[in-house]
Image (cartoon, rainbow, N blue to C red):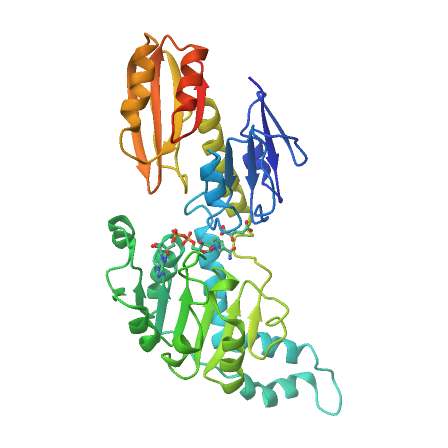
Length: 387
Ligand SMILES: NC(=O)C1=CN([C@@H]2O[C@H](COP(=O)(O)OP(=O)(O)OC[C@H]3O[C@@H](n4cnc5c(N)ncnc54)[C@H](O)[C@@H]3O)[C@@H](O)[C@H]2O)C=CC1
Ligand SMILES: O=C(O)CCC(=O)C(=O)O
């Protein structure tokens, strides 16, 4: 069986090398079985009938039309945690350089020339304009304590900071990863009030869009430094620029500059570099490649964002069904299989929000049975995987 994978963006060779000879990998594949993508937007891309999966080599999936994929029975993966350390290190960079006014200091140092006074003397005379506070003993506020937020929290503790964070969906596992000295509070307002430095690590979606706006900024300390290595859309640009102009926010570090913000006062902008390390590019691409192979070859799902995790060891033929999460679906599936005279040796079913996934190990699969399963109201896709 040959599978075709279309790569978009620069995907690390560590990932593409994991695919065996049964795969063709190219950036201009026509009607691929799967797409391997980083940040390229797929919102305006139409998907062929053959497309079974999309793997995002990274965390954020706001570049992928999730609802459309679910309705078309396309499984969407991401690579949780695979680039978290890279982002953590850039956040720490932002924290330190915004505190110590390093961008301005470097720009000033680059203008110096020996004249009546030597560069060395100008340095000693001019340096006081760039004095900035230490982060030790100050409070870092964190919104979102997932893979990145937790690493940032623990690193900040190690640097002597007090850390206050919030996350309405904090899992037990994520809570256990946090240094015990991290104070987890209930509301964002509690974080805004406490933070000398504020960093956000949440996904961009309709609930988080523009969460850092004038009302939120008004609840923060004067002179707060705000760091956004998550997504540009989380911050209201006009409100942030106004807060920088007034000095309410001392610095805004963003990995997502745009025409409004890139030249604004006291912005420290990087061009979406959070995950741009060889280590994280390798990790993300490798994890994404493994997820795609397991799904295409075995129908097994790990780390999907629109479908549940599910795996099944099969002896006969695997029939993988993506369907709506509504009553009587399992009985509808098993009736069709029973009426076809086939035996279900083993099966598993799991659901995620509006969608569900059932994998059946069937002895005696026929074309007619697959047609009948596909025709059931609520079934979105049926795939047969021969042993
Ligand atoms: N600059 C860059 O290159 C990168 C940016 N990112 C961005 O960072 C985001 C976070 O990444 P990870 O930590 O790996 O994801 P994650 O899924 O491990 O953590 C996100 C956390 O945000 C929490 N959350 C969701 N809505 C929230 C809300 N309204 N308030 C507080 N917490 C909320 C979730 O419960 C979860 O714990 C990604 O969605 C992506 O947008 C991720 C990787 C690289
Ligand atoms: O692939 C990249 O460089 C971007 C990473 C990112 O933004 C993410 O993982 O959410």
